[in-house]
Image 1 (spheres, rainbow over the protein chains, first blue to last red):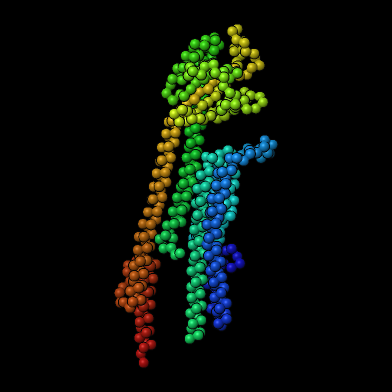
Image 2: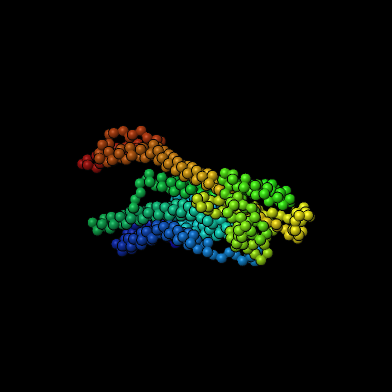
Length: 184
Length: 270
């Protein structure tokens, strides 16, 4: 439970022993209920990051065109910006890689979540297009890439946590049956 | 909220394929649009140079009637919005629209400010810098090119003229072409890309659904029905014909049900 790795969490759940004493049973039940609440919170993380990205995109669309351009000295120091075609090529490569990595995690049952880095990378794409004076033409492409990547990431993290919640609820049912059996 | 197996299989495929196709289509559309605009600007720059060279001899001879005739003829072509020649002070000397002759143009207006924005006017600039876009009275987009008319040796050595050798630019030619056809082509391209995206999405979702239904969901449904029959005590029926892995599960379920019946018989025996 301490690590971000989904594999470690799954292994920990399957290794949980059924307690022998009523106190142990109650303790295990409370811990399982706490884990269910934690998984419920984590299941929505993807949606929050998607909402955050949409908010950032709205701000970019509203305010980036009003931002002052870099002063000539800063432009000279930074050099020429990459061409819009080069940035677009990178955006395709990035989107493809991100989607493949998320699908890979879905296939292997890895529950790791990488919403924040994706929001960061997408904001960098907005910045690069802005510096290359091509943001107006390519804003919707970055927006579509962000929505796709973060939607898939949200879906993955949601289904992965729902699966863990289902397992924890089954564990609670086993604990309840154990308690009833001990009483009987 | 529990999702069905088919929804779990189709949702990620739909998100991935739709999103990636939309991103690629948007970027491809922008790339094609930029290429088409650059081609139009190149074509228009070449046209502007043709007009400048065509009028050069008449200008050397100070033959104003011929220059005006060339400007009017070029301006009467289809899709040519306007052709104007300005002198150094920004006065329209020749125009395809007779009403605007001798009118002074504001240096801060679009098309002039590109060169006159700084303290010293620019003498040279790239073809994309020379281009500007605006909407005409009919709401059509017009792409205009402002091409400088440079001072050449035979201009300042000619007996009839007063240009000094230090003067780099004698005036400018402004030519605008309607972008109606370009906009129509881009609109057709957009429609085709939307159609292509919808077709890819439809084929992907229907294809994946059909494959999963045929090879997984229908066999699973038959196996579930068989398991329910066994649970209801109808253990004598044979497992349905399924693909390899599912058929093994079906046979194992039958064996389990049979051994369960045998064991219950042993337990109930006194």
